Structures are given as C-alpha cells and as structure tokens.
Image 1 (cartoon, rainbow, N blue to C red):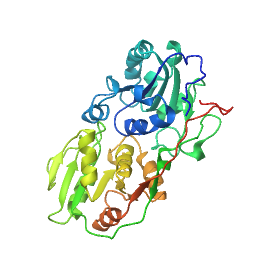
Image 2: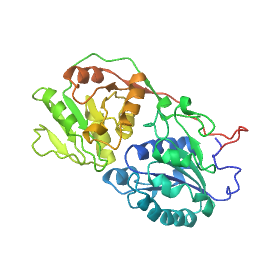
Image 3: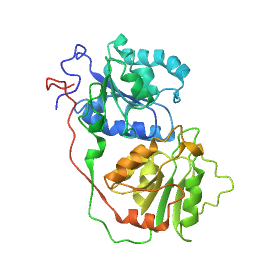
Image 4: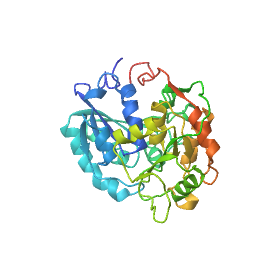
Length: 334
C-alpha cells in the first residue's frame, strides 16, 4: 500500500509524525496510523504528553513528550507552537497527523513553514460535527481534514475510513451475573465523575470483585469496595479490561476502543456538562454511535442497574478486516 506522502514535494524526507493528546485521541491515532501510513507508521515520530498511559503506550516507539496543552487555552497553543515546529523540522518530518485535541492547533496550522504537510482526523467523539479544534482547521485550506462519519463529509471534510468499521457485534454468550467488574471514569483534568462511581457502588452485589479506576475524581466519603487506583499504565489498563466480565465506563473514546479490542461491549455513561463533569456534552455523541451499532449499552449515570451489567457482559465484539490509505481526488495516495 502506498504511503500517503508519496509523490508530494517533500517525499524525499523519510518520517511521518503523529501528534495527539493523551487518552482517547492517542488511542485512536495508534490505530489510524496503520491506515494513514501503512508502510511508514512503524518508524514514525510520536508527539504527546507524558502520563502513565502514554509512557506505556509509547514503549518501543520514537516519542517526544511535550507539555500538556489544555482545551481552549490559546496562550498554551502559542507557547507550544515554536517548540513543535522546531521538532518537526529537526526530525525531518514530511507529513504530520493529529486526532486532536488542543495540541493539534500547535502542530498543524503552521507546519508548512517547516516543509511539513498537516493532516487532521476528527475524533470519533464528534459524530455531530467538528470539535473546537476541527472548526479552526477547517478554515485553513492547507490542512487536509478527514471525518470518520460519512454524513459529515462535504467540501471541507473527506470521509474514507472509520476506526469503528473494524469491529462488529458477534453472537451473545449466556447471561450471567458478573463476578469481576472494571469501573473507569477517565483521567482528563479537571473533571470528575462521582455520580457514576456512587451509582455503580449502590447496585453491585456484595462479593463482586471490582477495580475502580478513578482518575482525578475525588473519592472522599465514597464507599468503593475492591481495588481503587487513580491511574494505571496502558498495559495494566488493558489487563484489567481483559480480566473483567464487564466494563462500566464514562463515554470516553479511549476506553471504548480498548473494550472493543478486547472483544467486550461496555456499559457507557456520558458525562454531563450540567453536573460539571466535562466541558460540554460531546460524550453523548460517541455514546449514541456506539449504541446504534450495538457496541455499547448506554445509560445515564442515575439509570445504571445490575441488569445492564449482566446484559453487556453477555455481548461479544469481533474484529473486521478493513481500512485503506486516504487518497487524493485523482485516486493517488493522499
């Protein structure tokens, strides 16, 4: 399969770069890198923020950790831009890809100044339209943009692939009460998700083996039986998913994709802005898409019950072979 950078004015260079913030953006990009750069992804440069998750995910890869760029912080974008441009030039990067979020605004808009072509892939979390970063990139004609939803394609956005096309619902297993449960509410600062922790604790039968991955959520005063860990490495997180009979999670793309990889249908619970659980209600979007494909059981935080966990635990996900490199309008690799 031809590299997306072949035939470009900078094709004499040898290295793509992949830029994403931690969490779901980074998980998506590790999957999409094989589609975007089928021949060169293994020797690509990775740029992200340092966390226990990213350190584990990036083990064995050529990675540069950069300071965290918070959502909608223009000052941090402006501060980070010179650093990232110097890095792209020094490393001989000919094309830079990003799934977001704010760090993409530091890496992509001015990338042509150092001879690097910018490509932005909108997150699966944005089925209803572009994110704040996506709305900026769509105003820049030199940034190539891809949506993972065909209904969002148009003059400003191309659709040629979706990470979710690689998964399908399989035959269900017998319904049984879960013995091992993983509850995870993500790690994105500064938003906690006490409502979900409190609800699940109230519906789990005594004796259930539970791992609670609580992130930055304040668990003071909560009675959480089992093992409570704020964060884990990506390797440990995947091991917890593999061992669990069912996963209950906030509707974050990273955990959702990790569950699909493990062949499991999670119970997804969207965070709500009205409760101070996220910057907006975008988690409703990925939750809706997941439910429509049968790849998640979706509930509000105060609706989760034991039957939801039993039902999700009986469902199975199968991998589907799919995905091709993006192309130009004339059919050549993009």
